[in-house]
Length: 489
Image 1 (spheres, rainbow, N blue to C red):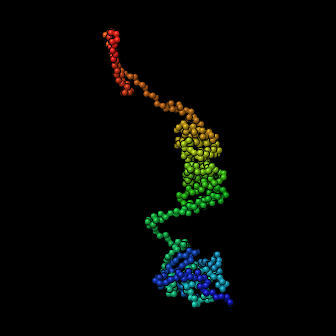
Image 2 (spheres, helix red, strand yellow; image 1 turned 90 degrees about the vertical axis):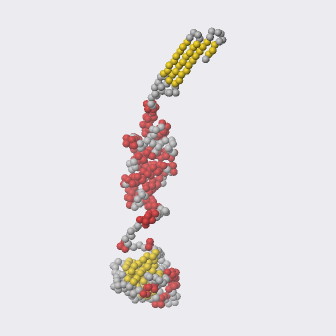
Image 3 (cartoon, rainbow, N blue to C red; image 1 turned 90 degrees about the horizontal axis):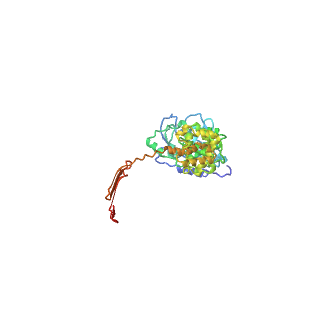
């Protein structure tokens, strides 16, 4: 380097080197612990080794002369597939691929190889710019045999994937032919991703473990929020309702969460300044596709009507027109109108506005005559779907419903109620039971009179219909011819 200052290995990457040294410890360890660096999420593995067949294909130790202050103990095995050489250079934001670094030009890797126990991927046999997907080695770095600045001559030439953190004394004992007995994952198993061919078969789960797994719930509802966001973005980004329906059908909605789709369609519709038929046609499409979604919109109708007082007038209008379109197209059955009761006690100002817009929209789409026919269908009348809309239980409720429909310009729907109210007195008189006939009283009496001046009278009676109306009485009178001498009893 001429007059350039000589850099020591500790000065090259002091934090990284000291960090690795801090993990290295020995004593009483059966195997070699090394730390694979998986995208800033480390996992600690333990490799157990024992003497084995010299010709074993899966060899942990494959000694070879290693230039630059070290030699290698590696795993070998043939393979045609290769992966790019990946090295993350200091000062860069992304790793580089298919090229090596030149430390003479001050290109230093973030993961240095000049450390005893570095776990390094081998080069492909055909190219030094490729890494073998099956071969790796543990680098036995010797600082006394290092090159300039105490670095290995191989620095920047290989992909470093980890470091030995325990049992490094065993690395010196590894010989050619020693095989890997087994590999354990000590920590970070949740960050380990295996290819499908190497993914282990699921272990059988006991009933107790299943109950424990079922008890774990996501209280943050992150998945539900993500589902709602996906549905919303799909609805708002589609060009027409057919495209939106096609994309929404591809979303994997968990069982039991289908109501999120209907709720989001209604919510998006209510947020518009004016009603857009796009939402009604989209809701109609899902009602036709699956009965589950139809049930969701039926439930949503009942829920919206019960909480209609919470909506602003503009939102209320859009929601009413959306459900009117579903009724006109038979997306939802007309039996949902059974939840409505048009009486003074059962309605509020918000619910009356909702019913007004709903029926005005129905009359505008179907016509007053066709609407009246739908409301007078024998099956619907017999099932009592519209008994709450056209009440006939009390005269005041009937008059209230007649006045309501007349005030919104739909008095033609009240002809039957007017006839019912007109004939109500006759019906009441005909249904009144006749009064019971009054039964005659029975009784007896006696009468007597004499010239001597005595008079007597007696009478007794009884009523067969009322046992309390029975009794008797008597009367007597006497006198004399002397003036002023009269006595009455």
